Length: 216
Figure 1 (cartoon, helix red, strand yellow):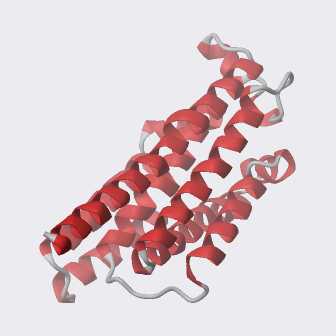
Figure 2: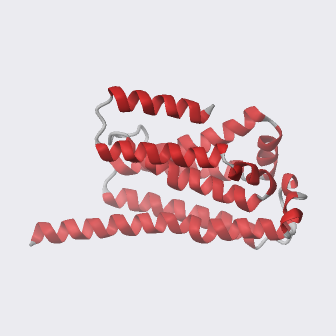
Figure 3: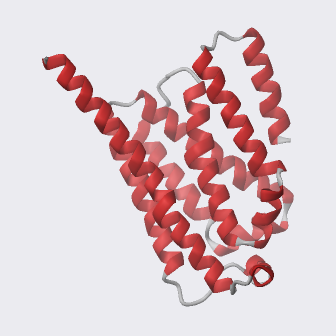
């Protein structure tokens, strides 16, 4: 359903919109990534492995969401980057609390609520960062990096598994539930948080380049 809606939106936007070529490429990239996340065999793997779910959520919020943001015009988001940094962090932590996560995996409506809320709050955050001053965008990226790293550390150093839906699935892949959870934590802690650090450093580099060009 999500992919069908995005595909219809992309087709209409491509045919009748005023998007530039690079915006169209960003939109196609986002839709392609969402297709991989939700209708490929990888989606089924996320039901078995929590570590795969971690990759899924990182790709959704740190790759698909910024691609969508880059495909849309730069506009100020109500509330600004500070508010959306907090809202997205709260949403991310909420859905990784065991009761909420277990509810999402046991009910289709709750599952799609989880996925859409993660994507839409991330999209709002990335759009807010695009419209923000460079310093604000960097602060938002670093704050998101920190909260992602904290959640990853919590999962990595836990002495017991949290998520009942993944107590059996990892065994078929040669992992214990705790090892699967720790792997998920490492994924969030290193590459997950690292994506935001790379984005912050890229913004900082562009800012320095502009400053040097202005003073040359």
